Amino acid sequence: MKFKVLIVGDYGVGKTSLFRQIEKSIPGAEQKPSIRLELIEFTRMIEGQEIIVNLYDIPGRELSNEHRSKHYLNTNGALVVYDITSPHSFRHTPFWIEELMNYSGFGHIPVIIVGNKADMREVSQRTLNPIDAKEYAFRLNRTAKRSNIENHFVEVSAKSAKGLSQMIDKLIVSMINHKKFIDNK
Ligand SMILES: Nc1nc2c(ncn2[C@@H]2O[C@H](COP(=O)(O)OP(=O)(O)OP(=O)(O)O)[C@@H](O)[C@H]2O)c(=O)[nH]1
Ligand SMILES: [Mg+2]
Image: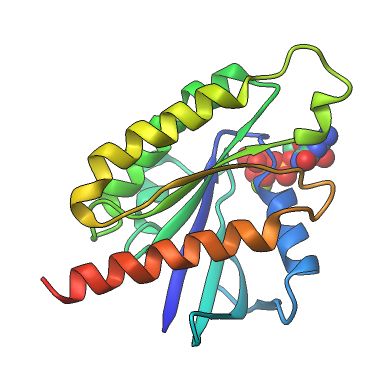
């Protein structure tokens, strides 16, 4: 099985840093030739199945909304990233989720809400409370239940690779369950 996964989120939240860290820390991850967006591919064994993930990094400011939406087609899941030191980037996560739902071609798709720059919690007093993001992921799950989707929330730091493989595997399990649901409809 092969899944297309996008990394989305506001300008400067650390999408490219996460992309590079995943490339470094997920065994077997390698860059693939791609026409516009940067692409890495890797394989994970999940529930006894070999899952190939094609992960794309979307540059925040270079693309217009219209242009960006073209890249969304056939997306199976996404990492929706905000910066824990930027309340605005968190408040804007619904925008990214809605855009994904509108253009993926599959309607609702599984997402992981990713609070990046977790290392900043130690140095800055003004960081977002993870409770709000958990609550948001919980609310998302209420509406996504009908599509057999479980969304998750994780806090990570692109500076360290901690938690990245669990983040990817959670998304893969959600995508497998959602695909089964769509295929059986
Ligand atoms: N402290 C800290 N800084 C980070 C982390 N991730 C990214 N940054 C910094 O945040 C800035 C933006 O990172 P990028 O990875 O370029 O962000 P982006 O989301 O790809 O930005 P655009 O593609 O322009 O939208 C850079 O200065 C990074 O070094 C992190 O986990 N911790
Ligand atoms: Mg970037």
